[in-house]
Image (cartoon, rainbow, N blue to C red; front, side, top):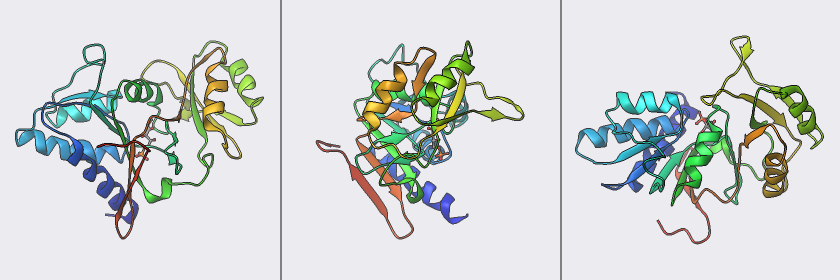
Length: 230
Ligand SMILES: O=C(CO)[C@H](O)[C@H](O)COP(=O)(O)O
């Protein structure tokens, strides 16, 4: 296994230790949290009883294959613990998410969660957010205008394309990837983007993560928010 993959596996598998019998668990999306879901599948086979709430169709499929019982956010409006990945993390536990296109459901599930753990490899930890183009989910109607409005905030918006076609999210929307030079005030930028008509959700997660598990070459680092109690 290549080193980066090994660091993702380390972080992803470590997170299952926080999952306890009887919990409702939010299941994130991406190649790091995939390792959490695979490990969780083994624990479920050994008798662990949990309900998973998937953040994407891809995760729903994987969790089903692993034999994990699933529920929906409509039936479980308070989630005990969610484990998810991220594209960038700063030392205040602010995140950029949405590289995998699942940011809307991920944010809804993070918001419903009593506790959010993020799993990443060390390349994702940054002093300031913004290297990674910020994913923003927008409706198709008037998308060119929405992109122009977004550019007035100082970024270069690019419509996400997959296999030569505009990428469509699980919710039937487009994603625009917006490259900012640096994001010094993530909370302020999140509010400004959310105010634009046509924007469904932005991949800035501020004040939602309680713990970040970082897979490093020599160890696993755990970053926690103030008041973390898990
Ligand atoms: O936000 C996400 C999907 O919308 C992912 O969690 C994020 O892109 C990280 O994915 P990976 O672990 O594959 O790097």
